[in-house]
Image (cartoon, rainbow, N blue to C red; front, side, top):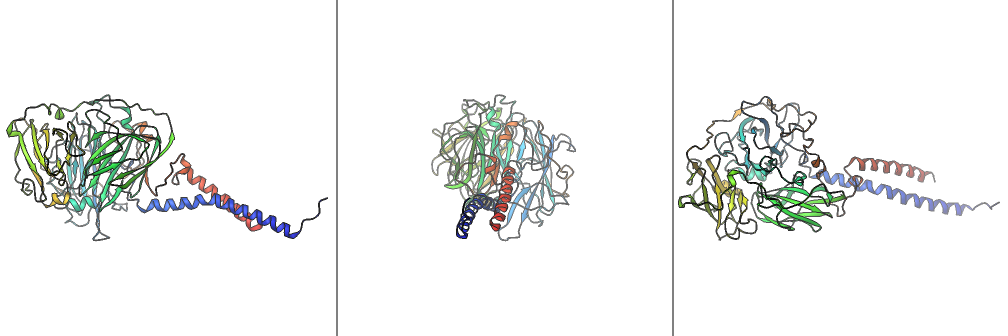
Length: 570
């Protein structure tokens, strides 16, 4: 029989056991502190609903004759922190809702070629003097009548303005954006958050052989606001993708100063630009690079495949953290592809351009060709359905943007760092004093075609003009569609319900959590904000916001409680 142990020996054993329990409690409890910290940080910059799911709601019933889909979007204003005024676009606010005004991006507007849309813009600003409008940057649609005419405006206090967008059958699929464009107020409203993304779905009638990886998309709207980078409304956006799988990153830049800068990606990725300003490159994909020069109104689509996590930087500032997770078999094949062009983009490079179809454009702070904006007087006339060649100067300091038509760079060697000879763009930021020659075809429609400097306070101060597109047999839009008073709950914007199943046409779900139309999109990177961790995630349990992580955290908390109680009784 063993001799009885002394009290000092028992106290020593108890102390050892208590130390072991303290270690176990710290081990299981420390992830809770980390999760709580991550959750707090994630809420700091949550400006609005997730970019991937926040779509405008279209319906096909109750629309006027000749309209395929109709919907409503609200412009909002928050002056509670005056003089720091927030502007934005949001889903319609119904009578039983408490709606906040978040700075952009607003709901993503998804369109399909061959459909005619009626969008009602409701100005929900409380002050009737708060005037605004909405411009679709890059879309090939008419700029007159009830189309994309930026001279039309709508006052606050619940007034509405209708836009009709007739998306042609051969309109190219691509990445575009929308923003406020009321002359004199464009800069403060866009800088305050009045912008969002527009996507025209890939046109399978025009390009039935569009690569499958093009559906595996990630949306990034990168804004430089007062010198700070905000992506998808967050100051530290997080994107999650699978390793070694091809994705299409749709990137839209927003910078009211339109300062061109480098968009760079980390090592461990293969990255190709595949589209610019909504138009596929002439050959897809482009050469592999790790950084790309973009201006403040550019859009660029990238095919990207990564093996390790990295940061996306714009101008040296972090725009997003991309977590690269588990390796899965890549269902997508990458190969060289030549997309078809719509009629409006064909036969331009080799066309004969008569002298009367040439025009010089010098952009300055004071105007275009020293002429201030005058909505009643055009800079010149342009012949309908003919090819025109314009020579741009000073487009680096004053980036040039043309409404209605994309321009083809024909300057030998291209223009500046960004714009390649033989490719199409809607905005040009070339060099300061060298010429940049571009061509376009005034096809499909005409009337008012606006051009301006995309430094938005320059545009507001008068660096904007228009040309009058004229010709025989030219389709016209002379529809008079003034603003009108309208209720918050519009007839084709029912109160949000559960998400509807996907349809072959643009989504009809009025909620902000939509099912995707393509199963591949279920693998898309989900976006959220929060502190960027330096190591890659590998399972859902590593994500403090996931249901798996919440369950794991609860289990750890229960275990820590039991161990703590045991510690007290020892």
